[in-house]
Length: 621
Image (cartoon, rainbow, N blue to C red; front, side, top):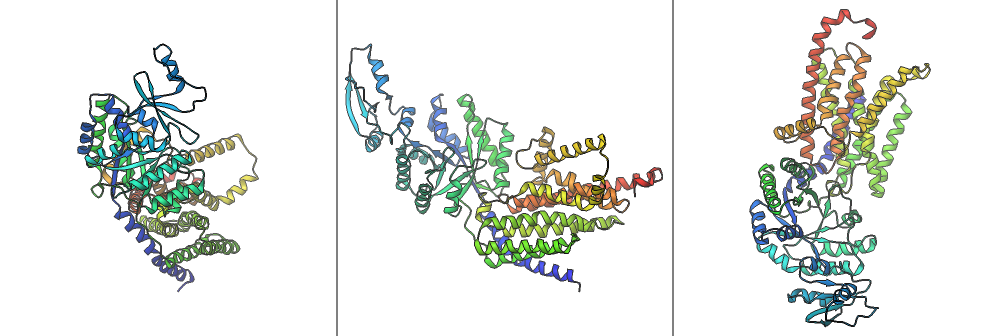
C-alpha cells in the first residue's frame, strides 16, 4: 500500500468525523422555513390620509392578500403632530400669529419650551405629562399646553409606542414588530423601558432605524440595552446590505439572535422582478423577513400593487416555505472533536496537495503554517486564525484539483470524464473542510464570514498559470519587448480586471443574461453559475482532451478551466446561502459544464481529424 493511499485514507476518516457539524447546520437551516412580510404602519397611514381609503379597509385587504406583520414606529411629539393628535407651536411662530389678532400673551425672551394644543384623547395627554413639565395656558379662546424643553427633550424624543395603533393592528390578526431609533440617552432609556414594559408573546422582534443600533457609539450602553432586551425575550433584525453600526456587537453578545431581513421598495422594479427578488431572498439567502415599502403612486394604485405583489409572492414561493412570525435560527454548537477532525483533515489535505510543489522544504513549510494556524485557533478561539486556515484550503483545493488531474494527456473521452470527476472530488474535499471549520450560527446569519473571496478568484488562476508556464515566463523576461507584446499584456490585464469586477454581488448583468437566469431558476429551482457551466468546466474538459494532442494548448485551456472549481469553492464560502442551495447549484454546474465540454470535444474531434493534415506541426507540439 502506497504512502499516498494511506494519507488519503486518513483524510477520508477525518472527513467522516467532521461531517456531524455540517449535518447539524443542515438541520438548523431546514427547520427554519417560516418567513414574514412586513409593512410600516406610517406608510399605510400616509396612504389612507391621501385618499378615500380607510385604514380599516386597507388593513383588511392586506390581511386577505397574505401580509403577516406591521412595523410600529416610536411615539414622539413630532409623530403626534404628523398624526394630527396635537398641533405644535414655537413661541416665535405663536407670537407672529398673534400680531394681527385681538389676543395677546406675555411672551418672555427666555422661553425655551414649546406650545401644543391639548390632545383630545386622554391617552396621549397622559404620555405627554409623563415626560414633560406642563403648564396650561389660555390664549384667547384656545387652551394650550406649554412644555418646558431641555437638552434631553426634543420634538423627536422617544416617548414610548402608540398602544392604540398596536391594538388596531392586532385586531386584524397581524403580528407586529417595533422600530427602535438611536437618539439621546433619555430617549434610548425611554425606548428600552417601554419595550420591556410592553413585552408579550405577540411582540418579539426589534428592528433598528437608521444607521445605528440603539446606544451606539457608547458600546457599554449597546451591550446593556441589548442584554436587557434579549433577556426579556426579544430578538433583533439584520438588514441585508446595511451594516448598522453596533449591530454586529449586539449579535455577538446575544449569540446571533437575529432574523435576516431584506428590504424591498415595490416601485423600483416591475412586479415579476420584485416577486423574483423576494423569492430568491428567502430561498437562496436565508432571509426570513421581507420588509416592503409601498409604491409612491396614487394611493389606490399603490394599495392594489402591494396586494398583487403579496398574492403573487405567496403563489410563487416554493412549497417548503410558509408565512408566519419570523424566528431566528436555533442555537447549535459544533462538537469540539468534530472541529479538531476538520482542522486535522485540512492539515493532511494541504500536505497531500503540496506534492505538486517540487521543493520539499516549501511543502513542509506550508503544512507547518497550517498546523500552527489550527493550534492557534484551538488555543485562543480567535476566529481570524480559522478564517486564514480556511482561506488556505480554499485556494489550494481548486489549484491542486486542476494541476493533479491534468498531468497526463487523455487518450479517450472516458479518461477525460474520469479525471473531471476526480478533480471535482479533490475540490469537494477542500469544500468540506472550509464548511466544517467555519461553522456556526454567526456564519449562517451573515455576521461572521469567509475572508478573502477575491483572493480565491485570483490566486488559483495565478498558481495554475505559473505552474504550467513558468519556464516560458522566464524566457520572456530575457526577450526584447515588442509593441505587440505590450498590447497582449494590456489585453490580458483588462480581461483580468473585468473578471475580478464580475465577481461578487455588485457586478452588472445584461438584460439577455438576466432573462436567461430567470429561465434557469424557473425550471431548475436554482440556477447554476454562468462562469462554471459555460466557461470553467467546459474549458477544463476541453483542455484535458486537447492535452492528448498538444500539451501547450491543453494547458492554456486549464487556466480558464480552474475558474469552474474555484467558483464552486466560492459558492460554499457564502455561508448565508443554505447548504441545499449550494449543493444543488454546484451539481447543476458540474453536470451542464461536463455536457457542454463533451460537446466541444466531439465537435473539435470531428473537425481536427479532417483538418489535421493542414495544420502546421509546430502549432500542435
